[in-house]
Image (tube, rainbow, N blue to C red; front, side, top):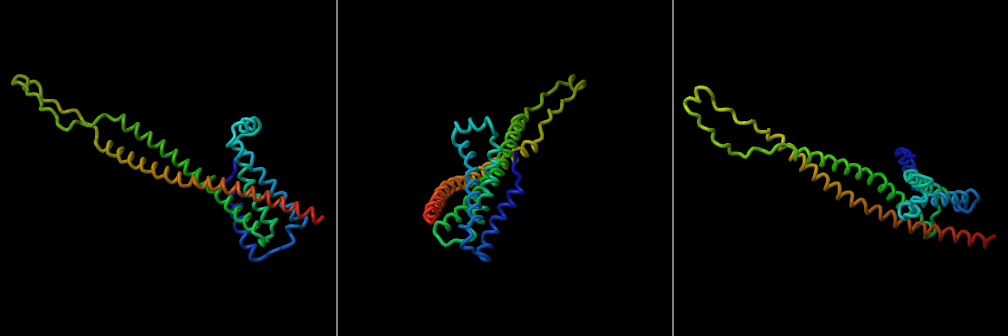
Length: 242
């Protein structure tokens, strides 16, 4: 099971576009507490829970060994990605653009931040890692080719051996051995230099983008905490109202 990038991008684009436009056009203060709005909120929470198995398997060895007997890690990642995009969509529909409380504003902002940081970490970091692996493979091939080339000539050829008169009648001085073309060595050296620079640049860029992964984790932890507060408050005040 492997997620398709075009579907994910479409869902993410829809999520980003629906939220601000809907807030300008429509606000419903009663829909979040209605039956339909409540069901959307429950579905959003369930989708958020579906993102946890991959996180647990990635960071806890015992959970990884247990889950690997039933489901592969790429499948868990696909579920994590799809659920991580669908949950905010359902949550925004549940909220119906009602942002009149600090908790709601923080939840919405963290939803946006978590999804965007996850998208950056999942796709841009993956592309950078793939490009970096390709560059390293190319660099290794160039180094192997460079080291396997014969050494360049020393630069000063020994003076030809003088032949005697009789030998000059029968033989002529042999041509010096053909030296390897210096262009091959120079071209390989230039390619090595370019590849090493590209590897360093891509590694530096990857380390910068890796900070987004930390941001994604921190935002996700805070988001789950706020969701617990939101659900707890809804149950508390809802049961009191009943």
